[in-house]
Image (cartoon, rainbow, N blue to C red; front, top):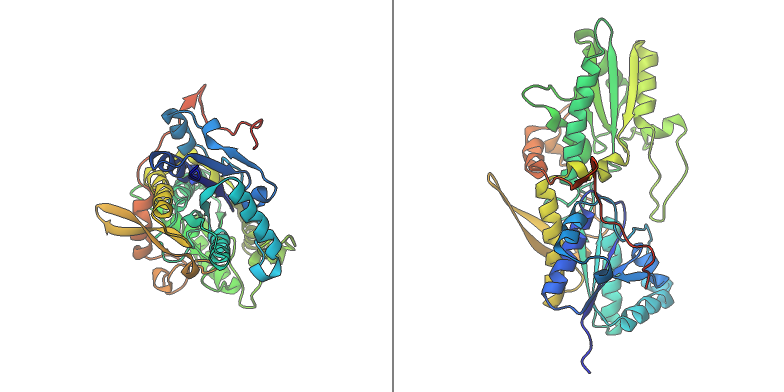
Length: 416
């Protein structure tokens, strides 16, 4: 009897508002292209090692479910931050993974994630080639950080940028309403360890009726506390209200994160990433002490990646597109590749899916170009804004039930 053609898909890393749109693209395209079953790993490759997976046909029953899935934030299948060891370090672990894949008669393995997830695709594809396994391994880009190499941008970034820009406008309105006869400084903290794409998106808040933030500091530029203080002091002399946006990952000249000045946490994840938090709070306290006025720190935190009610239509559509493109590539024999988004035009905005060797992408970070930051290092340029603006366009309204958005939720009683 002919081997059944099955596919398995997983989600990894920090969730986004549109990661499930990519999952929907994988599922819909796999069914259209004749794959017999589509399995979902529960909590990524870490769950797969425990043989935790689900037949997605038990979860997605209709086109309406697919539309709900596209509008559902976080990782529908559950995510993980699990680092596969190097092949030579633990070959038995790789053998276990491939035994599971063989048992499920998997032809294509698709992983939706960011930089660390592409490292997983690279290692599994390499092992398959070394050992003569026939499974195909494809990566689907996902990260609000927008730091994956070779792709113009990543699904998740546009919606996060839209939320950040809109929230920045709203915070500015709030601050202006409280600035009569007294100075008021607000420091916004936005995600971004080494890449400042999200923090730069606060500049999109500058519109006809809003001046946007006064200062923007990205992790690509060394942060100088004295220059920062002097700049804010100058602004306070000219205006009652000052709004500053900073990346959580801004560093001093000695390499320390600014958030470490407050004592910070010592937690480090499986990939060696130190937890960053408290940058805005520390800087707000610092400015309050030095300048002697009211200050506050606002940390956007996980709201940046789960605000599906403000998802960009462009972002949803591209997330769905790259999920489907991964299935198509695997079905046509590609492996060890990641789907990318190629921008063809800014006006009108046009993008298409392409694929690149994952070895050129994994463990490489794409940062904001220096020429997209002003000379002083405290704001982004018009080139940055022209790059980001098309990605936040359009809305993808949630289905509302009793005044709240409805989501598609995994049925907990279905496991294997």
